[in-house]
Image (cartoon, rainbow, N blue to C red):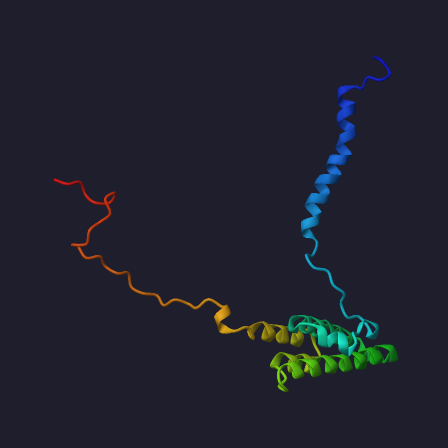
Length: 170
């Protein structure tokens, strides 16, 4: 065998790791979340009032929901008496109040029920209830109306059938 010649199996084995990598990448990419955004973990993640005011209502809700869940998780550990945890809980409550003020201002001075629940929530389950309330606030026109079940209309025997269904002419 000449030095430049390759064995048939050797050429295929070199392309195999690349093919496995490409197939793995194609299989894994759809599994990652479609949108990645930062979650509120500590007071350093808080946005300024001006940044909050620039957010859309859905983004304000997402921000409040993140803070609500984080506060609920911190409150689980609050029994340890660590000052750091207590300070983070206090800061989360202040941040939720700041978000609530902006939401209330946008709603013409009226605080929506989901925001009231979110500010009062101290468990992740209560935060989820506020999430459901937020989703339920969508206008009724956005959900399809249910149709009443109607009895099947009986055909008039004199009504003409389409030619492909009509009985053969005699």
